[in-house]
Amino acid sequence: MKNIENSRKNSFLKKIFIKLSRKLGFEIIDQNSFKIVTLDKKVNDQISTIGKNSINLPLGKIDITRPVKALDIIIRTCTSVNMLTQNKKRLFEKEKIEYTSRTIHSILNSVKNNSQLENIKINFKVIDHNSSKQNLEKINSIFKSFSINYDLINLDVSKFENEIENLNERGEKVSTNQMSNMANINKSLLEAKKSEDLIYFVEDDYLHQKHAISEMVFTYERLASQINKDLILCPTDYPYLYAKADITQNFLGHNYHWRKVNETLCTFLTSKNIIEKYWDQYISMCKKEHAPFEKPLHRIYEKELCISPIPSLAVHFTNVNSIFGLSPNVDWEKIWKENNQ
Image (cartoon, rainbow, N blue to C red; front, side, top):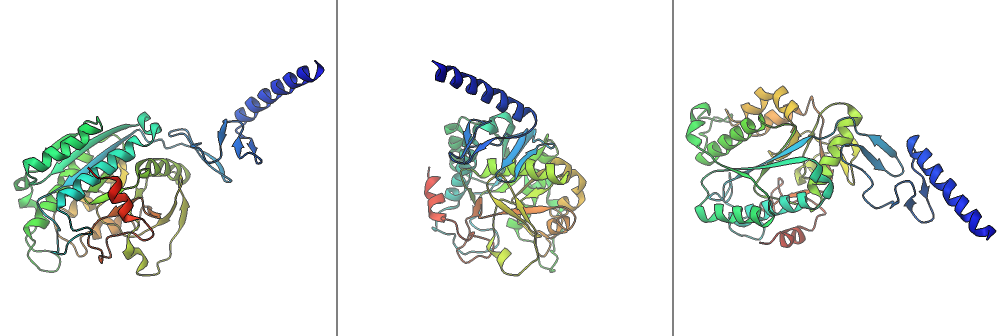
């Protein structure tokens, strides 16, 4: 009888101790069972909370001072053009709609993969140029299969043509495909101005890991709270980043390591604040074809922090030999098969 009373007393004192520890901002870890007693979770469970805190062992907890309120995902599609600037075939040598449909499937699957994302207002927009009715119906069926609503915007290139210089920075005539690409970027930037908080600009040939969107949101909150300012996230670990030995900085994200980069392509996540702050630089990509095309972005990264993950959260499915394509140390075929329609 005495043992039972002592057990109850110990249990009561344990609960009081746990509550007191949590109020003081401490978490208790049982290093024998790898259990966080104060959270009643295992160390490898989801222990961070979007909008509240980011917990990483053994570094402890960071209170989120820059919570993500909303996320607009803007997908630029053009299934009628296989490759923008070259005639080489992509990995697996499929029609463009296959890459577009799997890209969209992977993003929707990534959003559905983490229940904490339900606390964030996520909006989807597809800005399409010249895709066939059949391909648009396939895109619609993917959204329908996930029970997710989206806005389809049919791009009218003629509204932007007069704003685009005919000759690029190299003195060459700008191609029709490039002009439509620049018009699509222009439209996506205009749509971003309507956003509430974060915007993820994504091209239609990037297949995402299941945890890609949640990793980006968690990491954005964590790092923006640490540095006390907005930033830019590129989800792709491009092979060209290894072509030269740049000095960089390392950051600890949610479950990934991230590094500072000075260059990206046109798939990236950032805030409405950043877009408005550097509006002239962003919109300049839509007025003149620079060399490289993304030069205005690179100039922004001289002033603002831009990071990319190691290994990659999204893989650019272009030609196997492209330095702007397949990320190293990632099972490309697995990601491809996971997003089959």
